[in-house]
Length: 390
Ligand code: A3P
Ligand code: MG
Ligand code: MG
Image 1 (cartoon, helix red, strand yellow):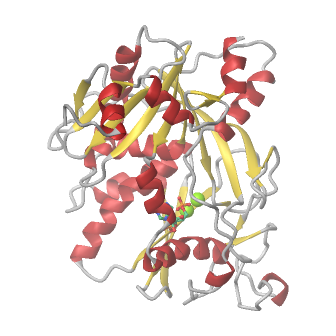
Image 2 (cartoon, rainbow, N blue to C red; image 1 turned 90 degrees about the horizontal axis):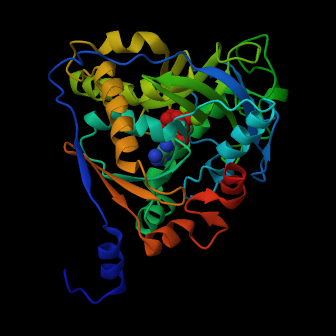
């Protein structure tokens, strides 16, 4: 590979300026001093419209309703408006953060990290990840780190060209969201009237799926000594929305559990369900169990805070303190690694399952690749970068 004449080979070599490594923790010992995690408090919310315009309102907020028994999650598949797969850019979250900061009248809170919730979930659960290899882009301005998941062209293509079977399975999750939500707060907790049954008249259907539309919450929290701003999608609220996270509900689907093996698999999945909700302060996870064919069998409510003790001592067990301690260590490692580099530098972090992470400083070729021909400095939109540098 050393004298690989292909452009790809050159790019790969040119990127490697320095390489550090941090190993995952042992999973057989409890974390001795887990860092504190502060209860998330909400700063603001925003919506993405059907045309994917970011609006500072709650137009995309949905209200929980019970789904009908035996609902068919295949319903409406051909009417799905599917948001194109794209790089997980941080732009929307930065718009929200910038707006919030401008409302503070000159106060300048010291923030250690700004990231979408999905990225932080992946980082915290990495010690238990058995297969996935994935990468992160990191920038740092005045002590605030910014994370975005790095998707290679190949991975992006993989995600857009899902096999039909996988695409349908992915639709089941969105279909469940439709059955479980309504655009108005509902006195009866189930869609019944024909007016709430969507154009097709299917009982309980909350309307055709448009994955462009999302309602997002931005919260402030703290892991150890690091203040963190996190943004994430919220599926719905139970009852009325009171401007806080207290009645947020995360909706999930999973295959029905038919034996001990299925159960262990589900317990492993609960690790991701748990951190996804925990990080944004979502107290309730409503799970719909389904047959492989997409018909709902049962539903179950999980209180987020109770999940760790449900899995303790079980075959699929995991310890959230291992994840928090790891996350804290990972953030210190990054801060130390990045220290002294410039505000336009981009670092590439690679997560290798069962091993750990490495950090590499990208060279100009690598940075241009991250910018992708858009008006950016590294992966940050130029307007934001200039706001921070002004
Ligand atoms: P399920 O979680 O019920 O499978 P979320 O649960 O985070 O609100 O996401 C909503 C749905 O998006 C998921 O529902 C799933 O169908 C789909 N989805 C999320 N992440 C996905 C991924 N990495 N690959 C495929 N589908 C995904
Ligand atoms: Mg969601
Ligand atoms: Mg969900």
